[in-house]
Image (tube, rainbow, N blue to C red; front, top):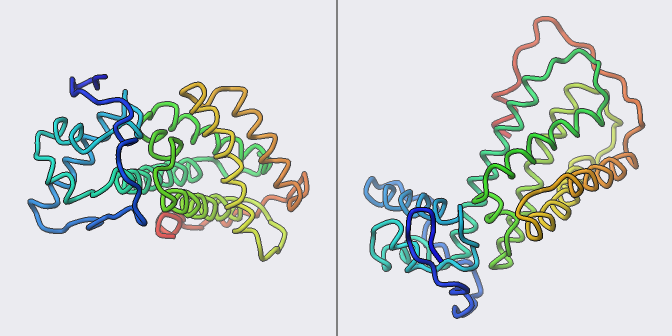
Length: 248
């Protein structure tokens, strides 16, 4: 098997690897110039490979060949492929988070949309992001190579859910329920369930999976929200909340 850049990848190569007790990241983000550049070269090489290759089929040799560096260097920065999946998942999640924040800030706060329409609009943005970004799908919806990756996925949903909740709070008078952050984390898990299954089966989040995920998501949220929620009154001189939302 070859990537778009011509590097050969041995199918099912990770099946020969022994399992570890941890994902074994020797370092998260080196600050020294040369080490940092090498770190980024490896990550960029994996992104290129994942345009065509499944994440479970990658090996350190594949990555070294694609990046044009030695295999020991790849192994030093990322001792396991699971560690690479963790790093990629973190980066793609942050990227999507910022995209969702920008989307929310661009929408007019005119009180004309229901909360259901707001949730659907945000989900459509996320779906478009994944369907145009196969490496992100492999990192976040491909096979979890270690239990740490699944735990990280839950944390990603927690952070994204908190951002979505904050955006909704700025537009609507939400019920004063203390568990809403947990509710939105669970809502992210619901979307992931349908979207990951669709990606693994079809290579995209297809229309049927998206519509089914929205039925499940909105049905779940109706346990906590009324069908009609009053929009918040907009203060004319209110400053932009983008910086605050991004920093959370």
